[in-house]
Image (tube, each protein chain N blue to C red):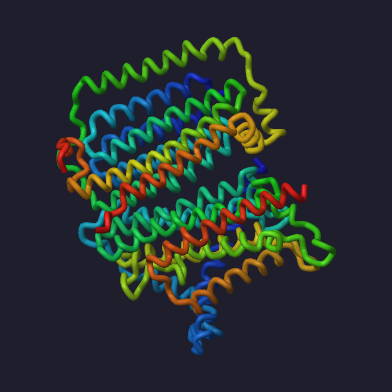
Length: 324
Length: 100
Length: 171
């Protein structure tokens, strides 16, 4: 019973923090992109526009909820939830701190991949149920894109798994305790740099963010899979994207940057700082890079990332054999 | 503890549903899904036996079944797309000519 | 507790499987099948096969069913107009007979061993110490190494086959 209460308490705290982070991530993204493009970004609602996310939330809640003609009612309603729930559920196994993990599953990494592979359904079903050409095209594109980049993503973390010999995220973090040669922290990013880069690129593609935002390419598809969505249903897709961004950053931190490990500051702060670094990187990429063309996107995934990831696995295996 | 026969009963039921699906549906894609269902019913027996015989061989076999299923889906869906391109239909009772 | 979970997952799997066969709309059929797969993953976890459970979700729900949905959407399949079930007794009977034969075979072939033993070395307690994933990996790469290598040939030929079949001929 005590275990159940403690777990529920952890879940409440984690979900609350993540929703808060999602809200302020939208503010951060608008501010940072504003700065990069030499404009102000949100500045009217509250000091530095800090109340902007709340204003946006209220606005979205009071918007009219539109159901397109001939849309598939049930799936049209389900799709936003199907998109948002996996984004939250991923956090169940992520260690925020030494004792702050909701549950340590011994196949935690597989759990993350299993849940993350479900996010695509929300987008595909939304595209299909809207009964609109643009939405359908967005949905089709995202299905092809996400299945293709999942391969690179899965193979890129294999190197880490081979080095640590475990699938539990807590154990992976603990294996990164200590230093290389007394100076460098013993993070997986140093021996697995290629895997790290492939992971970052593929997770950016899985997130459907620029430069991989083909599913919602506004210059050609209006808004892609969520063209027909309005009000809170649209907000759920929006929140799912940002929650997924935080999840991807948290996983990258856990796998490659030593999770909550770090000197002086408390572990949760270290974890948050590293996650923040990744979030900033994602925003920076969006502001900097132009969108891929569709054939370039597929070619890059299958002909560059996948072979590189395979080579990384082979090289890591050879290195482990030689050094052991 | 849930006994072995309960799992076998369930997997037998899923298998029957799969067979009925293959035998009665006209849509090639749904027939294909029913085949996947049958394969999964078999997987369930493998895992159940592996648990009750204290042997992991069953779980290893599930991996092989999954690999074959994945290969089968890739080829099968390609065949369905090729069929659709020629015959403009996925209904198996309308695809009965040897000449395209 | 275990019975409650088992019955929940079993009923969910059975009901979704039946719904999949009865649905006219292929997208709904695919969704029902996904629900069946999830219930099945739950059953795998009840059977202490965590690795299989998550791999099952990644392979079936994450890849195979996405491909199915992709093809359904690509071909823009609408719901069938004819009633989907054309009840003919022969196939149903055939299914029953086949399933019965399978069950009987299993019961005759493995039944005695279930009751009398011998059991393998991997009971739940041993696995908790050694780790399910590690042990499955050890058996897969030691005792089943050649079959494992052969599956790579299957996958390669499937990949080539799919490309040859689905690619439009450029003239």
